[in-house]
Length: 176
Figure 1 (cartoon, rainbow, N blue to C red):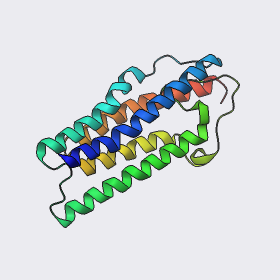
Figure 2 (cartoon, rainbow, N blue to C red):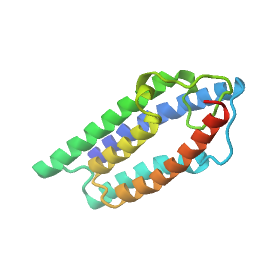
Figure 3 (cartoon, helix red, strand yellow):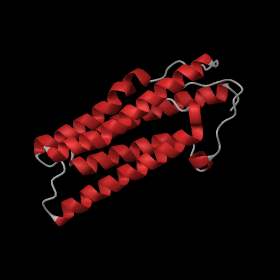
Figure 4 (cartoon, rainbow, N blue to C red):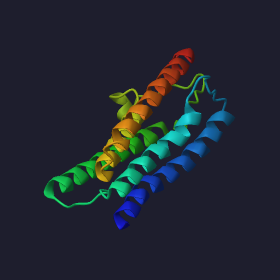
């Protein structure tokens, strides 16, 4: 039970910090003339994102494998999951810092504002979404979520695919 609590804290404390920052940045972006494009899947994502993590942690708890280090192999899997998760969080926060007050949970585009091409955006078009995939993989490994991990990642991946298409259309429409 202690391990499950630690995993919940590892996932949800940073998520709450990110949510507060995103909400503040969203208000600022909209106040400065930011536009939300139609067709975004944010309403679903705002429930699915924490829901997938919760499902993985719950599965691990239910199976009794969240994360039980009963053998060397399971220890290595848990450590690999932790490394994936931490690396993903570092990438995400690099993207957040690079975007500054333009980083939000919603797709909000401000006309006339240049596309960020610094930080991880030098090499990746959507580093935040790569980070989310890493977070999901890391928690799946740490929690032992053999069902919720792959199913949740696939479902959330479909949402990310839709989200990226909405974001790309919005950026193109704004001349970026």
